[in-house]
Length: 89
Image (cartoon, rainbow, N blue to C red; front, side):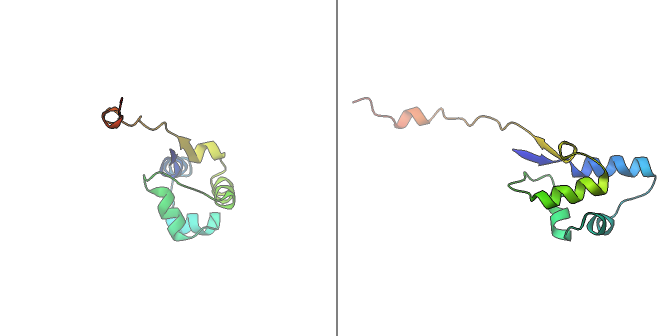
């Protein structure tokens, strides 16, 4: 699954510049909607993201796409009961 690292990127940038970065600052600087920023700041997996969204965030934070997104392997599903439904007749 793809996870957003935007909260970490934001926190790192705040440390570097010495001031808080608000959602409004990100919204204006990256040209994004409040809902897009809120979605990327959550810890929910990302189903899809537009290239223009990534471009705006990279431009605003002066970073790479890989700084914003991260791939996490999903835990394998437990299929132990799947064999119970297979007939051997």
